[in-house]
Amino acid sequence: MPASERLDTHQKALNLNLDPSKFGSFAEIGAGQEVARWFLAVGAASGTVAKTISAYDKEVSDDLYGPGVRYVSKERLEAMLDSEWAQLLKQLQKTRGPQTRFFSFVDTVSARNFAGTNEPHGWVGLRFQLQPGAQPNDILLHINMRDPSNLLQQEAVGILGVNLIHAAFHQMETPETFQEGLAEGLEHRIEIDYVEVRGADFAAWDSGSLLLLLVEKGLAEAVCFPAHGSPVPPSEVLYKKAVILAPGYFEHVDATHAAIHERLLNAAIQQFRQEFSEAKAPSGFYCMPAMPLASRPTSPELPALLARIEALRTRGGSVLVFREPELYAMTSFVNRYTKEPVRFVMGLSLLIRAFEYRYSKLAGSFLEALSRLFAQNVRIYAYPMTSNDLMEAIQNLSAAEWEWSETNGWVTANQLRLRPPAGHLLEYVLASNFLVPMQITAAQAADA
Image 1 (spheres, rainbow, N blue to C red):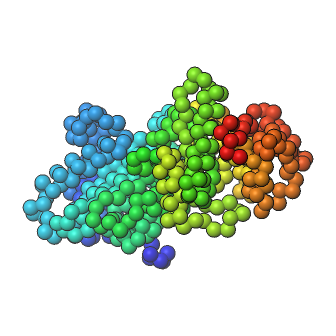
Image 2: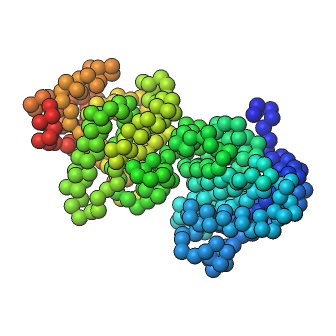
Image 3: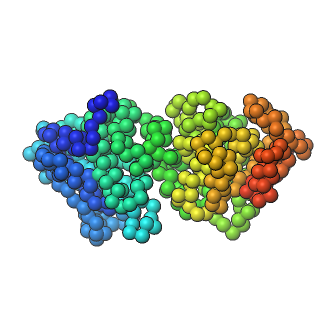
Protein backbone atom coordinates (compact mmCIF):
# COMPACT_ATOMS: atom_id res chain seq x y z
CA MET A 1 0.00 0.00 0.00
CA PRO A 2 1.55 3.38 -0.95
CA ALA A 3 2.45 5.67 1.93
CA SER A 4 -0.24 8.16 0.81
CA GLU A 5 -2.91 5.49 1.24
CA ARG A 6 -1.89 4.32 4.70
CA LEU A 7 -4.66 4.50 7.25
CA ASP A 8 -4.27 5.38 10.90
CA THR A 9 -5.81 3.26 13.64
CA HIS A 10 -9.00 5.35 13.78
CA GLN A 11 -9.55 5.03 10.03
CA LYS A 12 -8.88 1.29 10.03
CA ALA A 13 -11.39 0.66 12.84
CA LEU A 14 -14.01 2.90 11.25
CA ASN A 15 -13.62 1.28 7.82
CA LEU A 16 -14.13 -2.14 9.40
CA ASN A 17 -17.19 -0.89 11.27
CA LEU A 18 -18.69 0.49 8.05
CA ASP A 19 -18.30 -2.80 6.20
CA PRO A 20 -21.50 -4.81 6.87
CA SER A 21 -19.93 -8.07 5.66
CA LYS A 22 -17.66 -8.41 8.74
CA PHE A 23 -18.93 -9.21 12.22
CA GLY A 24 -17.17 -10.61 15.24
CA SER A 25 -16.38 -10.91 18.92
CA PHE A 26 -13.58 -9.65 21.17
CA ALA A 27 -12.18 -11.42 24.23
CA GLU A 28 -9.28 -9.63 25.93
CA ILE A 29 -7.48 -10.49 29.16
CA GLY A 30 -4.69 -8.60 30.87
CA ALA A 31 -4.35 -5.22 29.13
CA GLY A 32 -7.81 -3.72 29.33
CA GLN A 33 -10.17 -3.93 26.38
CA GLU A 34 -8.19 -1.61 24.18
CA VAL A 35 -8.85 -3.40 20.89
CA ALA A 36 -12.62 -3.45 21.34
CA ARG A 37 -12.47 0.15 22.62
CA TRP A 38 -11.23 1.37 19.25
CA PHE A 39 -14.24 -0.12 17.47
CA LEU A 40 -16.64 1.19 20.11
CA ALA A 41 -15.11 4.69 20.10
CA VAL A 42 -14.90 5.46 16.37
CA GLY A 43 -18.61 5.05 15.72
CA ALA A 44 -20.84 2.56 13.88
CA ALA A 45 -19.65 -0.24 16.19
CA SER A 46 -22.92 -2.13 15.79
CA GLY A 47 -21.75 -2.97 12.30
CA THR A 48 -18.79 -4.96 13.59
CA VAL A 49 -19.04 -5.81 17.29
CA ALA A 50 -21.15 -8.79 18.32
CA LYS A 51 -19.68 -9.02 21.83
CA THR A 52 -16.79 -7.87 24.00
CA ILE A 53 -15.63 -9.74 27.11
CA SER A 54 -12.73 -9.55 29.53
CA ALA A 55 -12.46 -12.44 31.99
CA TYR A 56 -9.84 -11.06 34.40
CA ASP A 57 -10.71 -13.29 37.35
CA LYS A 58 -9.00 -16.69 37.10
CA GLU A 59 -12.06 -18.64 38.22
CA VAL A 60 -14.21 -16.87 35.65
CA SER A 61 -11.59 -17.50 32.99
CA ASP A 62 -11.39 -21.18 33.92
CA ASP A 63 -15.16 -21.49 33.75
CA LEU A 64 -15.21 -19.97 30.26
CA TYR A 65 -12.13 -21.57 28.74
CA GLY A 66 -11.19 -24.51 30.94
CA PRO A 67 -8.57 -24.94 33.69
CA GLY A 68 -5.14 -26.46 33.73
CA VAL A 69 -2.89 -24.19 31.64
CA ARG A 70 -0.89 -21.02 32.17
CA TYR A 71 -3.04 -17.97 31.72
CA VAL A 72 -0.65 -16.19 29.35
CA SER A 73 0.18 -19.03 26.96
CA LYS A 74 -0.50 -20.37 23.52
CA GLU A 75 -2.68 -23.10 25.04
CA ARG A 76 -4.92 -20.55 26.76
CA LEU A 77 -5.11 -18.47 23.58
CA GLU A 78 -6.25 -21.45 21.53
CA ALA A 79 -8.83 -22.38 24.16
CA MET A 80 -10.17 -18.83 23.98
CA LEU A 81 -10.30 -18.92 20.18
CA ASP A 82 -12.16 -22.24 20.15
CA SER A 83 -14.68 -21.12 22.76
CA GLU A 84 -15.39 -17.67 21.32
CA TRP A 85 -15.66 -18.95 17.75
CA ALA A 86 -18.03 -21.76 18.69
CA GLN A 87 -20.24 -19.36 20.60
CA LEU A 88 -20.25 -16.80 17.79
CA LEU A 89 -21.37 -19.36 15.22
CA LYS A 90 -23.92 -20.92 17.55
CA GLN A 91 -25.59 -17.56 18.14
CA LEU A 92 -25.31 -15.93 14.72
CA GLN A 93 -24.65 -18.49 11.99
CA LYS A 94 -28.33 -19.09 11.28
CA THR A 95 -29.30 -15.43 10.96
CA ARG A 96 -26.11 -13.86 9.58
CA GLY A 97 -24.05 -16.74 8.16
CA PRO A 98 -24.95 -16.53 4.44
CA GLN A 99 -23.83 -12.87 4.13
CA THR A 100 -21.26 -12.45 6.91
CA ARG A 101 -17.52 -13.01 7.24
CA PHE A 102 -17.19 -13.82 10.94
CA PHE A 103 -14.13 -13.23 13.10
CA SER A 104 -13.08 -13.72 16.71
CA PHE A 105 -10.25 -11.66 18.15
CA VAL A 106 -8.67 -12.83 21.42
CA ASP A 107 -5.65 -11.93 23.50
CA THR A 108 -4.17 -12.91 26.86
CA VAL A 109 -1.51 -10.48 28.03
CA SER A 110 0.75 -9.82 31.00
CA ALA A 111 1.27 -6.06 30.81
CA ARG A 112 3.70 -4.23 33.10
CA ASN A 113 2.68 -4.88 36.70
CA PHE A 114 2.48 -2.18 39.36
CA ALA A 115 5.96 -2.97 40.72
CA GLY A 116 7.51 -3.26 37.25
CA THR A 117 8.97 -6.68 38.09
CA ASN A 118 7.55 -8.77 35.23
CA GLU A 119 8.56 -9.23 31.58
CA PRO A 120 5.55 -7.81 29.70
CA HIS A 121 4.41 -10.17 26.97
CA GLY A 122 1.32 -11.81 25.60
CA TRP A 123 -0.44 -13.96 23.02
CA VAL A 124 -2.76 -12.52 20.38
CA GLY A 125 -5.02 -14.49 18.05
CA LEU A 126 -7.56 -14.03 15.30
CA ARG A 127 -9.89 -16.56 13.68
CA PHE A 128 -11.63 -15.24 10.58
CA GLN A 129 -13.36 -16.04 7.31
CA LEU A 130 -12.49 -14.36 4.03
CA GLN A 131 -15.77 -15.55 2.51
CA PRO A 132 -19.15 -16.17 4.20
CA GLY A 133 -19.49 -19.80 5.20
CA ALA A 134 -15.85 -20.62 4.43
CA GLN A 135 -13.60 -22.63 6.72
CA PRO A 136 -11.83 -20.20 9.05
CA ASN A 137 -8.19 -19.21 9.16
CA ASP A 138 -6.12 -18.61 12.30
CA ILE A 139 -3.34 -16.12 13.05
CA LEU A 140 -1.42 -16.53 16.31
CA LEU A 141 1.19 -14.04 17.56
CA HIS A 142 3.49 -13.86 20.56
CA ILE A 143 4.39 -10.29 21.51
CA ASN A 144 6.78 -8.51 23.85
CA MET A 145 5.74 -5.04 24.98
CA ARG A 146 8.56 -2.50 25.08
CA ASP A 147 6.77 0.62 26.37
CA PRO A 148 7.78 1.70 29.91
CA SER A 149 4.29 1.95 31.45
CA ASN A 150 1.17 -0.18 31.72
CA LEU A 151 -0.97 2.51 30.12
CA LEU A 152 1.27 2.81 27.07
CA GLN A 153 1.40 -0.97 26.71
CA GLN A 154 -2.38 -1.18 26.75
CA GLU A 155 -2.50 1.48 24.06
CA ALA A 156 -0.01 -0.44 21.91
CA VAL A 157 -2.00 -3.67 22.23
CA GLY A 158 -5.07 -1.77 21.05
CA ILE A 159 -3.28 -0.53 17.94
CA LEU A 160 -1.88 -4.01 17.25
CA GLY A 161 -5.32 -5.61 17.48
CA VAL A 162 -6.86 -3.15 15.02
CA ASN A 163 -3.88 -3.63 12.70
CA LEU A 164 -4.25 -7.41 12.86
CA ILE A 165 -7.95 -7.46 12.02
CA HIS A 166 -7.53 -4.90 9.24
CA ALA A 167 -4.50 -6.66 7.74
CA ALA A 168 -6.28 -10.03 7.79
CA PHE A 169 -9.12 -8.65 5.66
CA HIS A 170 -7.26 -6.10 3.52
CA GLN A 171 -3.52 -6.79 3.36
CA MET A 172 -3.18 -10.49 2.58
CA GLU A 173 -1.60 -10.10 -0.85
CA THR A 174 1.79 -11.32 0.41
CA PRO A 175 3.39 -12.11 3.78
CA GLU A 176 5.34 -8.86 3.43
CA THR A 177 2.26 -6.67 2.99
CA PHE A 178 0.55 -8.47 5.86
CA GLN A 179 3.45 -7.91 8.26
CA GLU A 180 3.80 -4.29 7.18
CA GLY A 181 0.16 -3.70 8.03
CA LEU A 182 0.58 -5.49 11.32
CA ALA A 183 3.43 -3.23 12.42
CA GLU A 184 2.08 0.17 11.38
CA GLY A 185 2.35 2.74 14.17
CA LEU A 186 4.16 0.38 16.54
CA GLU A 187 7.88 0.90 15.85
CA HIS A 188 9.91 0.18 19.02
CA ARG A 189 6.68 -0.40 20.98
CA ILE A 190 5.78 -4.04 20.34
CA GLU A 191 8.04 -6.88 19.31
CA ILE A 192 6.48 -9.86 17.51
CA ASP A 193 8.77 -12.88 17.90
CA TYR A 194 6.38 -15.65 16.86
CA VAL A 195 3.72 -15.94 14.19
CA GLU A 196 1.71 -18.96 13.15
CA VAL A 197 -0.92 -19.05 10.41
CA ARG A 198 -3.37 -21.82 9.66
CA GLY A 199 -6.09 -22.30 7.09
CA ALA A 200 -6.70 -22.66 3.36
CA ASP A 201 -6.08 -18.98 2.64
CA PHE A 202 -2.53 -19.37 3.98
CA ALA A 203 -1.72 -22.53 2.02
CA ALA A 204 0.94 -20.78 -0.07
CA TRP A 205 2.65 -19.11 2.90
CA ASP A 206 5.78 -20.76 4.34
CA SER A 207 5.87 -20.78 8.15
CA GLY A 208 9.66 -20.59 8.38
CA SER A 209 9.83 -17.62 6.01
CA LEU A 210 7.16 -15.84 8.06
CA LEU A 211 9.34 -16.09 11.16
CA LEU A 212 12.45 -14.91 9.33
CA LEU A 213 10.53 -11.95 7.92
CA LEU A 214 9.81 -10.83 11.49
CA VAL A 215 13.54 -10.48 12.03
CA GLU A 216 14.33 -9.08 8.59
CA LYS A 217 11.63 -6.40 8.87
CA GLY A 218 12.71 -5.37 12.37
CA LEU A 219 9.61 -6.69 14.16
CA ALA A 220 11.68 -9.11 16.29
CA GLU A 221 15.17 -9.11 17.75
CA ALA A 222 15.33 -12.89 17.39
CA VAL A 223 13.23 -15.94 16.51
CA CYS A 224 13.74 -19.55 17.55
CA PHE A 225 13.78 -22.82 15.60
CA PRO A 226 14.17 -25.66 18.17
CA ALA A 227 15.94 -28.86 17.21
CA HIS A 228 12.70 -30.80 17.56
CA GLY A 229 9.13 -29.73 17.02
CA SER A 230 7.69 -26.45 15.81
CA PRO A 231 9.15 -22.97 16.33
CA VAL A 232 8.49 -21.26 19.67
CA PRO A 233 9.03 -17.78 21.11
CA PRO A 234 12.65 -17.43 22.30
CA SER A 235 11.52 -16.77 25.86
CA GLU A 236 10.21 -20.33 26.14
CA VAL A 237 13.67 -21.84 25.60
CA LEU A 238 15.79 -19.17 27.32
CA TYR A 239 13.84 -18.41 30.50
CA LYS A 240 16.06 -18.95 33.54
CA LYS A 241 18.37 -21.25 31.54
CA ALA A 242 22.14 -21.44 31.38
CA VAL A 243 22.94 -20.98 27.71
CA ILE A 244 25.68 -21.81 25.20
CA LEU A 245 25.60 -19.63 22.08
CA ALA A 246 27.52 -20.67 18.95
CA PRO A 247 27.43 -17.71 16.54
CA GLY A 248 28.21 -18.00 12.85
CA TYR A 249 26.84 -17.76 9.33
CA PHE A 250 26.93 -21.56 8.76
CA GLU A 251 27.09 -21.10 5.01
CA HIS A 252 28.26 -24.68 4.36
CA VAL A 253 25.41 -27.17 4.77
CA ASP A 254 27.29 -30.35 3.83
CA ALA A 255 27.71 -33.24 6.28
CA THR A 256 31.40 -32.51 6.96
CA HIS A 257 30.80 -28.96 8.11
CA ALA A 258 27.67 -29.98 10.01
CA ALA A 259 29.77 -32.46 11.99
CA ILE A 260 32.29 -29.71 12.79
CA HIS A 261 29.52 -27.42 14.04
CA GLU A 262 28.08 -30.21 16.16
CA ARG A 263 31.48 -31.00 17.65
CA LEU A 264 32.11 -27.34 18.50
CA LEU A 265 28.82 -26.97 20.37
CA ASN A 266 29.22 -30.29 22.21
CA ALA A 267 32.76 -29.32 23.25
CA ALA A 268 31.40 -26.08 24.73
CA ILE A 269 28.76 -27.97 26.69
CA GLN A 270 31.48 -30.21 28.13
CA GLN A 271 33.58 -27.14 28.95
CA PHE A 272 30.60 -25.65 30.78
CA ARG A 273 30.14 -28.83 32.81
CA GLN A 274 33.76 -28.62 33.88
CA GLU A 275 33.30 -24.99 34.87
CA PHE A 276 30.02 -25.65 36.74
CA SER A 277 30.19 -29.23 37.90
CA GLU A 278 27.02 -29.01 40.01
CA ALA A 279 24.91 -27.10 37.49
CA LYS A 280 22.34 -28.52 35.11
CA ALA A 281 23.45 -29.00 31.52
CA PRO A 282 23.11 -25.75 29.56
CA SER A 283 20.88 -25.25 26.55
CA GLY A 284 22.92 -24.95 23.35
CA PHE A 285 21.98 -22.80 20.35
CA TYR A 286 23.49 -22.00 17.01
CA CYS A 287 23.13 -18.23 16.51
CA MET A 288 22.69 -16.98 12.99
CA PRO A 289 22.39 -13.27 12.12
CA ALA A 290 19.83 -12.30 9.50
CA MET A 291 21.70 -9.07 8.76
CA PRO A 292 25.27 -9.11 7.49
CA LEU A 293 28.37 -7.58 9.02
CA ALA A 294 29.69 -4.53 7.20
CA SER A 295 32.21 -6.77 5.45
CA ARG A 296 29.34 -8.75 3.91
CA PRO A 297 27.49 -6.54 1.42
CA THR A 298 24.15 -8.36 1.26
CA SER A 299 21.85 -10.41 3.44
CA PRO A 300 21.20 -14.02 2.44
CA GLU A 301 17.89 -14.78 0.77
CA LEU A 302 15.24 -16.38 2.97
CA PRO A 303 15.44 -19.81 1.23
CA ALA A 304 19.20 -19.88 1.81
CA LEU A 305 18.73 -18.99 5.48
CA LEU A 306 16.10 -21.70 5.87
CA ALA A 307 18.41 -24.26 4.26
CA ARG A 308 21.14 -23.41 6.79
CA ILE A 309 18.68 -23.64 9.66
CA GLU A 310 17.38 -27.03 8.56
CA ALA A 311 20.91 -28.37 8.09
CA LEU A 312 21.67 -27.54 11.72
CA ARG A 313 18.34 -28.86 13.01
CA THR A 314 18.77 -32.13 11.10
CA ARG A 315 21.73 -32.94 13.37
CA GLY A 316 19.82 -32.02 16.53
CA GLY A 317 20.76 -28.36 16.79
CA SER A 318 18.45 -25.58 17.97
CA VAL A 319 18.81 -22.26 16.15
CA LEU A 320 18.30 -18.65 17.19
CA VAL A 321 18.15 -16.21 14.27
CA PHE A 322 19.09 -12.69 15.36
CA ARG A 323 18.39 -9.46 13.57
CA GLU A 324 21.79 -7.96 14.45
CA PRO A 325 25.16 -9.69 13.87
CA GLU A 326 27.06 -8.20 16.83
CA LEU A 327 27.78 -10.44 19.80
CA TYR A 328 26.85 -7.76 22.32
CA ALA A 329 23.34 -7.61 20.81
CA MET A 330 22.99 -11.35 21.41
CA THR A 331 24.11 -10.90 25.02
CA SER A 332 21.57 -8.14 25.58
CA PHE A 333 18.74 -10.22 24.14
CA VAL A 334 19.49 -13.41 26.08
CA ASN A 335 19.91 -11.51 29.34
CA ARG A 336 16.29 -10.39 29.10
CA TYR A 337 15.26 -13.89 30.05
CA THR A 338 18.01 -15.39 32.19
CA LYS A 339 20.48 -14.46 34.91
CA GLU A 340 22.21 -17.82 34.58
CA PRO A 341 25.66 -18.12 32.95
CA VAL A 342 25.86 -17.34 29.25
CA ARG A 343 28.77 -18.73 27.27
CA PHE A 344 29.68 -18.08 23.65
CA VAL A 345 31.72 -20.63 21.75
CA MET A 346 33.55 -19.69 18.57
CA GLY A 347 36.56 -20.56 16.49
CA LEU A 348 39.59 -18.29 16.59
CA SER A 349 38.80 -16.80 13.18
CA LEU A 350 35.45 -15.47 14.41
CA LEU A 351 37.15 -14.14 17.54
CA ILE A 352 39.63 -12.24 15.36
CA ARG A 353 36.78 -10.86 13.25
CA ALA A 354 35.09 -9.60 16.42
CA PHE A 355 38.27 -7.73 17.35
CA GLU A 356 38.68 -6.35 13.83
CA TYR A 357 35.06 -5.24 13.37
CA ARG A 358 34.35 -1.50 13.57
CA TYR A 359 31.41 -0.97 15.92
CA SER A 360 30.16 2.21 14.26
CA LYS A 361 26.68 1.99 15.84
CA LEU A 362 28.17 2.58 19.30
CA ALA A 363 29.53 5.90 20.52
CA GLY A 364 32.21 4.02 22.45
CA SER A 365 33.13 1.78 19.49
CA PHE A 366 35.02 -1.41 20.41
CA LEU A 367 35.39 -0.54 24.09
CA GLU A 368 31.63 -0.12 24.48
CA ALA A 369 31.01 -3.33 22.53
CA LEU A 370 33.26 -5.25 24.94
CA SER A 371 31.56 -3.80 28.00
CA ARG A 372 28.12 -4.68 26.64
CA LEU A 373 29.22 -8.15 25.59
CA PHE A 374 30.53 -9.09 29.04
CA ALA A 375 27.85 -7.20 30.95
CA GLN A 376 26.40 -10.09 32.96
CA ASN A 377 28.01 -13.45 33.64
CA VAL A 378 29.20 -13.87 30.06
CA ARG A 379 32.35 -15.61 28.85
CA ILE A 380 33.70 -16.70 25.46
CA TYR A 381 34.99 -20.23 24.98
CA ALA A 382 37.57 -19.92 22.19
CA TYR A 383 37.70 -23.10 20.10
CA PRO A 384 41.16 -24.00 18.70
CA MET A 385 41.90 -24.18 15.00
CA THR A 386 44.73 -25.53 12.90
CA SER A 387 47.19 -22.89 11.82
CA ASN A 388 46.40 -23.56 8.16
CA ASP A 389 42.64 -23.24 8.67
CA LEU A 390 43.09 -20.05 10.67
CA MET A 391 45.33 -18.51 8.01
CA GLU A 392 42.81 -19.36 5.29
CA ALA A 393 39.84 -18.08 7.32
CA ILE A 394 41.28 -14.61 7.92
CA GLN A 395 43.13 -14.08 4.65
CA ASN A 396 40.56 -11.53 3.47
CA LEU A 397 40.86 -9.48 6.65
CA SER A 398 43.34 -6.68 7.17
CA ALA A 399 44.71 -8.79 10.02
CA ALA A 400 48.41 -8.22 9.51
CA GLU A 401 48.75 -7.27 13.17
CA TRP A 402 47.81 -10.79 14.28
CA GLU A 403 50.43 -13.45 14.94
CA TRP A 404 50.38 -16.78 16.69
CA SER A 405 52.44 -19.73 17.74
CA GLU A 406 51.25 -23.30 17.34
CA THR A 407 51.46 -26.73 18.92
CA ASN A 408 51.54 -29.65 16.50
CA GLY A 409 49.89 -27.46 13.92
CA TRP A 410 47.13 -26.24 16.27
CA VAL A 411 46.52 -22.75 17.68
CA THR A 412 44.68 -21.92 20.92
CA ALA A 413 43.50 -18.50 22.08
CA ASN A 414 46.39 -17.99 24.48
CA GLN A 415 48.78 -18.46 21.55
CA LEU A 416 47.33 -15.48 19.68
CA ARG A 417 49.22 -12.19 19.74
CA LEU A 418 47.91 -8.81 18.66
CA ARG A 419 49.97 -5.66 18.42
CA PRO A 420 49.22 -2.80 20.87
CA PRO A 421 47.07 -0.99 21.67
CA ALA A 422 44.31 -3.51 20.85
CA GLY A 423 46.66 -6.26 22.00
CA HIS A 424 46.35 -4.95 25.55
CA LEU A 425 42.60 -5.61 25.40
CA LEU A 426 43.20 -9.16 24.20
CA GLU A 427 45.61 -9.72 27.10
CA TYR A 428 43.08 -8.23 29.50
CA VAL A 429 40.15 -10.43 28.48
CA LEU A 430 42.42 -13.48 28.64
CA ALA A 431 43.84 -12.61 32.06
CA SER A 432 40.37 -11.78 33.40
CA ASN A 433 38.97 -15.10 32.16
CA PHE A 434 36.40 -13.37 29.97
CA LEU A 435 38.07 -15.25 27.13
CA VAL A 436 38.60 -18.92 27.95
CA PRO A 437 41.01 -20.86 25.69
CA MET A 438 39.69 -24.33 24.93
CA GLN A 439 42.34 -27.02 24.65
CA ILE A 440 42.97 -29.35 21.72
CA THR A 441 41.16 -32.65 22.20
CA ALA A 442 42.40 -36.06 21.16
CA ALA A 443 39.63 -36.20 18.54
CA GLN A 444 40.76 -32.91 17.02
CA ALA A 445 44.37 -34.01 16.95
CA ALA A 446 43.35 -37.24 15.22
CA ASP A 447 41.31 -35.34 12.63
CA ALA A 448 44.14 -32.98 11.75
